[in-house]
Length: 449
Image (cartoon, rainbow, N blue to C red; front, side, top):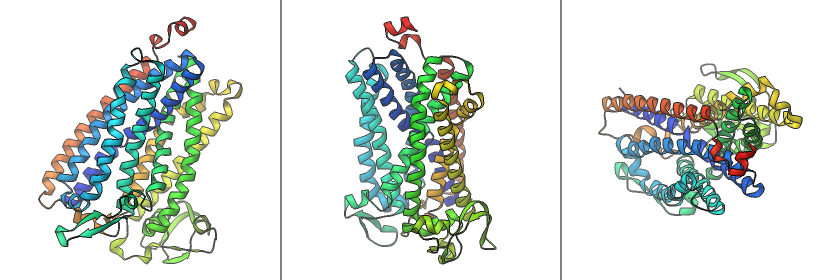
């Protein structure tokens, strides 16, 4: 039992499961600000009812997200002690900033958001909604900054040698604004907005198909579709910018993403395909020169291929290639579905469009899959480096933890996470089946309803 492989597998399980929830919190936070802002502007009681319903969903995702995120902090010490020793100075500042500027801001206003409806004025409650939303976004900022430093380290120097070596910050802002942090952060945030928006779209479509809570569902659908379309289109744009950054800073990853083999030659863009590593090619549908044109504005410009790198510095090609192309395909499908929904909104045609509504019920899965695939591309595509070009993944593993111990904890974590996921689905389904509450409407609005 290889401790390095099992430790990687365990961290992949924990972070993959945890990452179901933060994008939902970030996306729903934005939607809540829009809904409550519309209520304050229009005084339409339906918007308050919508906000209060989605606040309950937000509270559930926040609670599960916090519970699942704590485990990763311990894994840095138990499974990745050598890595933690090396990056402690860098990660310590980023994670401390996340705790101060994000977690305390978000959790500090969460009680007002959840329980302050009848205890504070509308303006103060709206402020709490904005602060919780801002806290969720700040949390993403510092986590992505830390991870981006692993992808494109900057603003540091290495002190010591061998096992005692560690990275120390020499320029805090160079570390924060490392070459990939801004592109990756924006792409991560719009992916989170898409995740929250399509949950709203999915639940609204469910109510429309069941002919329940129709006024609520129609109003929620309009807001959800607006955010979903914007986020889906923005994901396409930010994904292109992020890919160009990968080509500059991590050419081996870009070669794996697009199945480029020749060391330096004009490159095709593969629509679908299968990587034939032995034959040094991708079998599938491709558009000659398009990748070169997208990266450099010239279809004849050379792109660095995987054969330009030593074999022990190449990421797993098949997994990275298929994950990247599946993520892009899902993103294009979400854009198409959002455009279809917006096109059907005039004259209320969407409310009776059965098959588009059925697709929208299932659409909640799309952003979640795309988020997970994106992290696979980012993390597996970085291999064999845990800190790109500086520290190999195998060298970051704890030397005193054996494979049996990691396997035992992996099985326990998997069992606990399955139970947590079942509990989350049960509670989420219960809240959705129950629907919005009449008492969430102000008295006048309740009378009209």
